[in-house]
Length: 272
Image (cartoon, rainbow, N blue to C red; front, side):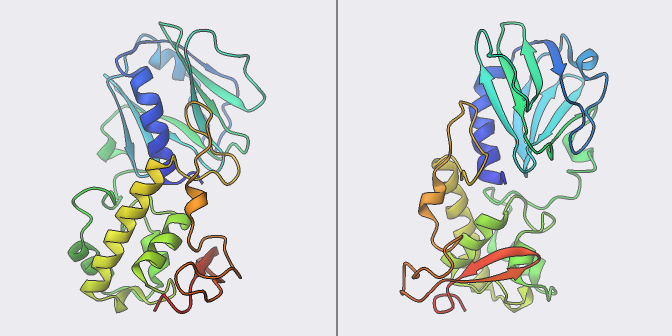
């Protein structure tokens, strides 16, 4: 957490408020996140104008003329936009991007597993982004692509689906829900999937992620959007975190196992 829908929700919340605006200052209160924030970040960014905001996988990209800021929300990060006088920073408010119209973009991260990085280059050349698979909601993620990507892989399909080299951004929650909707056991060897299986899975991934974005993502512990609101896709879970409860389709108890060190939920009747 946060996963792709939460990052996309954040992007859509902040972009209209910072696009085309010029930075007056960057105030770094705590540089020691997962990766240490560059000491000269404020000097680099002061006076630069935001040209575009995008998402790649679970990274937010804020583009300037000379490069871009990459933000990863880690386990507990969030970005809030304040217009006018921002409230006093709290203990876990680690970075403020302060714009010349007094708009403030504030990075909050209690666990400090996130990252705020500067890169003077194109996104496709950054080592964190260079080898990523296709975006799941774009045209390149097709049944034929997925079938070819998986046909030699013996690992469980859930593990492969969560591999950013196969497809980006399908984290644990949405992998569980997508595999349930597609009727596929998460423990099945990836190479056992037929083209029809892949077609169902691609359709499910796209539908689950689109619905999660529409509902503002999932809030299990810390996530809030750019206005401080929680997501509510967790109210629509069919299997995730429902071990022992009846399957909403067939009534059989939802089971839980561990795959790739992640809690994995499935219906033993509906998924094969």
